[in-house]
Length: 280
Picture 1 (cartoon, rainbow, N blue to C red):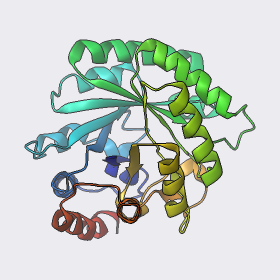
Picture 2: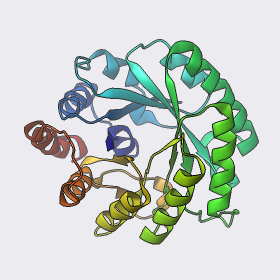
Picture 3: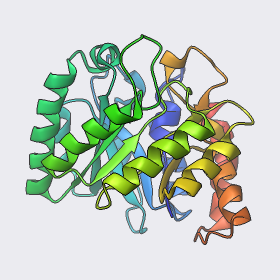
């Protein structure tokens, strides 16, 4: 099981700016835990996401001697080009919405234009030894009335597979997923695209996380995103109680299901305690 810790997603919507030195301390604490990947920052417009304007400076202060791989989010080709300046970044993440309305709101482009960017970023990743992770935003429905169905997610996955994208993460942007819809979607995708690594990037209200994790596990998911204490989530959810899956709940659920994970529990507790200082 690959655990992806997402402090970038947790921090990006905070009203207060987290000082760069505190970000570095928190990320370095997370790097000691043993997560497969750390979604640590993003190369996007500082006007759009001011919290991430110091990503390059943060990267300079990270302890890169651990086995945890780094992932940075980008919203266009220019952002992807910035990642090529940093050999430490293994994964480049791109949010591709299956909702036309949200794609326009999130990146000021249509889905068709975003797919052109995905192709260009995929080629850039191949040339520079990085790997593209495409997040299918609004992957469990949307509040705009735009068309949605598991079949639509399958169509997007086919287009991405044809481009050579190897990691796809349907994302529950507004917390609309249910255990039933999670299990159905991932079971169908994993069966239809056996060579693709499908990840679950889910959001949940308090008390919902365990059932959502269990549903993903039943479907065969082996890559799951979380954030300590469940911080973060999409502002579009319009619900302060909807956040990322709490990593501690994911870990507890995996242990209860006798799924082996290799984490440094002492380092986990240190990072967990430090998260209070970061998020307030």
